[in-house]
Structure formats: C-alpha cells, structure tokens
Length: 257
Image (cartoon, rainbow, N blue to C red; front, side):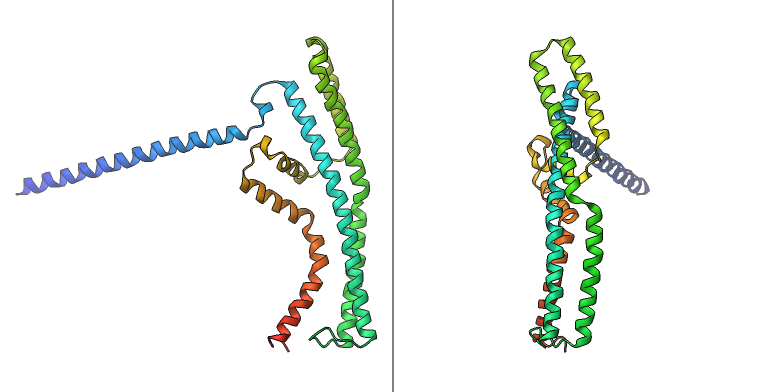
C-alpha cells in the first residue's frame, strides 16, 4: 500500500514536471515569435537611407529632412505670430468690455458684478496683457520665421545640386561634389539656429508614408504638436469666455449665489 502511494506521488510529480516543461517551452516559443515580430516591425521604421551603407543617400535624406523641418519651423513661427496677435487682441477686448460694463452699470447676464470685481478684473487683464506681450515680443516669431525660411531655401539649393550630380557627373566628380555639398551643408547649419524637435516630428507626420507611421502615431503626434504650439494661445483667447458662460450656467442652476 505504501509502495502504491509512493508510485502515485512519483507519477503526479512527473506529470507536473512534464506540464511545467510544456508550458516553459510554449512560453519560450512565444518570446521568440514576439522578438521576431518586433524586429520586423522596427526594421520597417528604419529610414530607407540607413538600410544601405551609402553616404550619398544619407546626405540626400539629411538635406531633404532638414529642409522640410526648417520650412515647418518657419510656418510654425508665422502661426505663433498670428495667434499671439489674436490673443493680445482678445484680451484687450475683454478688458474694454469689463470697463464698459462698469461705466454703464450693466450686468453680466445672471452675474451681479460689483465695482471691486470690475477693478480686479481690469487690473488682472492689464497685467496679463503686459506680461504676455513682453514674453511674446522676446520670442520675435516674425524674424525667426524669416531666418528659418532662408535656411530652408539654402539647404534646398544644396539638395538640388546633389540631385543633379547623380546624372551629370562621373563617379570621381560625384564624390568630390558630395564632399563639397556636405561641407556647405555644415556651414549653413552653423549660420542659423536649430529648429525644435517637434518641427522635425511635424515634417515626419506630413511624410508619414515614407516614415511608416501608423494611425495612432499620427494622431498622438498631431495632438502633441497642437498642445506644444497652439494650445496656450487658444486658452488665452477662449478661457475668459468659457469662464463667463460657466459661471452663468452655475448661477442659473443655483449652484452658486
């Protein structure tokens, strides 16, 4: 009886070892397959110029991508310049409206605004406009946009030279021309400030087919770009109006008195 019990224990132990081994083997095969899938997916994301050890293709991509990023930087600064002016305009309009309400003794819909409230709002808007104007003026978006545009044009000329050298020159002349273009490219980069990282990301989003970006990468990339570039301006433009409407709604439903 004891021997039978011992055999049963050994059998259960062997079954456990066998099941553990099968599970471990299945887990190992799963890891290998997942590693291969990730490697294949990452390989697709590698820019084509890196798949071959060719300096001409690498330089071609650098010129093309940097030119595109600098154009995006120029466009971004023009957009920020426009939104900055709109923000100051809206804040100034809000300040004027607040003072008009005080002068003509009007009411803000359901809100009863006292003289102290009007004085506080006027002071707050004045300080906000002054501070914001100083900060945005220091950025000098108009000058930056012009410089980035000039840089992109210069890099574009080098890019065209490189493209023409592929079909019009011998191998020796081509190598010499590539070295010259590479040196000129370095000189151009030293002349101008570098663009922001999200300018390059915006360029990649515009050329998502080439860079192999899927829908989610494009969606989150566009959302990130919006919050980094445009969100603060839209907040300054619409926040006072949203606050005014929100307070009146709370007043209507008697959430506040």
